[in-house]
Amino acid sequence: MALRVRNEDGTSYSFTDIGRDFLRVGGGYSLQGAGHYTVRIMLSGTMSSICMGLCGAAIGGTLTGSAALPFLICACGGFVFGAWGYYRTSLRESLIVLERYPRLLQLHLDANFPQKNFLSWRQDQVRAAEFSTSWTLQSMLMVAWLTAQPAVNKVFEEREQQLVDEARSEILLEAKEQALISES
Image (cartoon, rainbow, N blue to C red):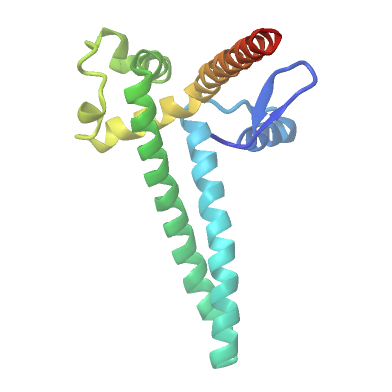
């Protein structure tokens, strides 16, 4: 899970929401669907481009005395590898979420791409094997995964709270049993 921070009202947000909030403040733009994916892949590619470009410039400057061309080559390569890496990671995570919560992703697929009528798909069609056959379906799935992320986080937090409550009740039960044993 992403880094999560609790607000004063008990809700939480993840580190990945910062970019969305920044764009809302900057221009009032509310990211949804494909726009959210585009911004995140551009940020990933840009960060990778900066790191690779600076490393290439440092190495090129040390070896050749000029850092311009090594910076350009490494920065371009960094953007491509950063974007590709984010794409692969997003695809892997979205396929996992699809297997765990197929109905939730089906709802978000239909909300983001109503022309495909994903709600009419049978449950056996909304599986990772079906989406692995087409890069267009994979791209749609990644967009749906990003828009479903708040709901997935909410499900995770509810499950986490349930496990904490179960552990707390087990500890209390053990403490009561120990108290009964010590009284005897």
